[in-house]
Image (cartoon, rainbow, N blue to C red; front, side, top):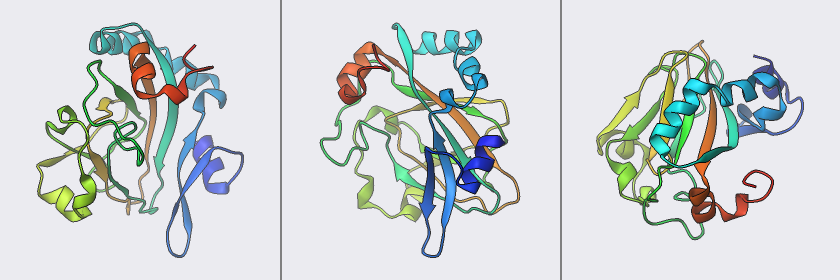
Length: 202
């Protein structure tokens, strides 16, 4: 609640805002580990780490974290995209990496069709780079088997980095918040994110 309040009030740093023609609307904050011990505690939850280890199958580290927030009535969409390195404008990765690479999305609120849940395309996490720019947003929601991923508060979504995804805006009076952590094996950091090496990957 406090992070969201600071973002809306433009207090502090590392907040992001969506540009509408007539306004900017808060939707994201970075560097959550520095904002309070609860975010570090959640990141190191042993039940969560065991599940991540079973999926990755390699030694791993939490490399980065973020807080994504759809405020009531904010109506901020997330256009269809793939996450880096597949979404890089310059030199995107074309093939799926052999070591599992995913975000762990921890839902703090119910995520519904009405308040802007994430949608994804079945099976597309296995095909590498997808040329989403060839289609408009309505086509991506309607023509390629996209499915909504409605979640309950406390649910955890393992979100493949290569999977195309998007969401519509929140026009309701409810809030939709996610704290997410990107755990990575060293092979993934070195093969996909060489610029992230250093203090985080050492």
